[in-house]
Image (cartoon, rainbow, N blue to C red; front, side, top):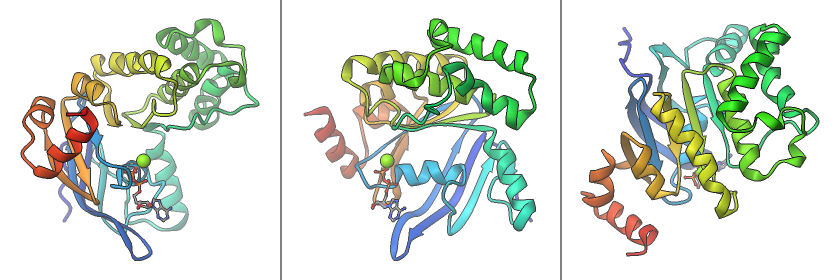
Length: 255
Ligand code: ADP
Ligand code: MG
């Protein structure tokens, strides 16, 4: 019997190895609907692998992944599995560090292609939705340009709009601002903060401690493939319990 968990995203006993390298060593977490979880930790601690596992870009070796009470890594095979994965993936928006817009499509086409091809939306409806999203991310005037003409911050805002166009249940951000020039970071963070205020469920991998403290309901510190510590930002940032968390934060906050 499987018990259906209550969160929007629930992970139970997630293990992932690349060959002999164990990267995730039993991860349990739950993010309630509308809540923001930030994931911090040193390079190589498994943060990207964790996010990629949630939407099945990586196949885990053990454990359960749940999205809104639906088992993501369902024990299905072949075509049934493919169909299932394609469906649940549409409910998760992902924004990576590297801008992954289609270079040969305009901003408008980048945003409408998913809803048209995967969700069967009509062109006009998809474009209306895209225009509303472009307004939301402050890029209404860029609908007809190609990604090469955008700054890094503008590209990430388009990437967010594109993900939102699929009306996902959760947004996953993997260091969405770490490839940006410093002066462009805020414009992307502001969009993420706005989503937080609208109660989009989000998992955010970030190295920006101040942003994480500002936007998150909970913060999770990972090291060596395990969750070392998890709690409200006030606690994790100002009164961390674990020595490993303190050491990490000392380096990051320059204390
Ligand atoms: P983080 O995002 O926290 O920096 P990653 O999840 O990218 O960490 O990587 C965790 C560990 O897994 C690292 O040791 C990394 O080298 C290794 N790793 C990541 N992806 C692969 C892969 N495709 N094949 C082999 N090892 C990998
Ligand atoms: Mg990473």
